[in-house]
Length: 167
Image 1 (cartoon, rainbow, N blue to C red):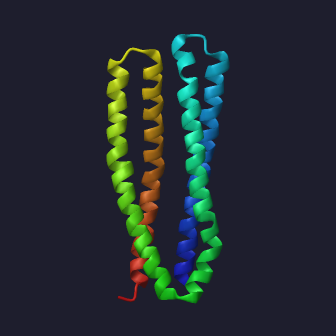
Image 2: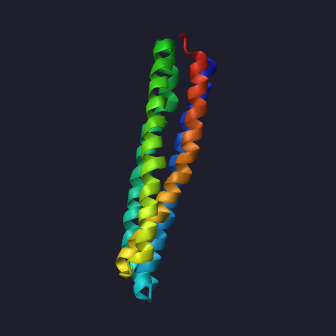
Image 3: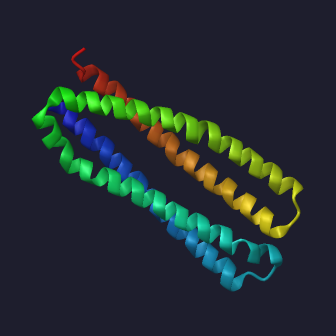
């Protein structure tokens, strides 16, 4: 039954990540409002829309994480009680798929996007484009930071699950 405690801790970690992302989205939306209402230069005025869009995107990401993992905290004990071997096997498959997805999207595609945005911000002088590039770099770097923690937690949880796997 110790595996349930690890599973619940993993789900709580995911819920915490969702809350961190939600907090960041609130900050980004406040910044967007600040640039909209108090921005005086053309560059400052250019930031409000990219920040608002990224703030809404972060809210969607946070909500997805939260609503996908919060129910697991209460569902895990019941699932384990019904069939412990199936529970561990399903969790092993899910954590392996999650690691594969994180590797591809967060640690291969996002860095390429951040590098592309950095190059765009350096070479494109239009203020609106530059603002989009800079905000996308910020968003990508933030998601990589949060997801590096998620990946570490996922890898640790996967290793623990392997100890409980019957094969």
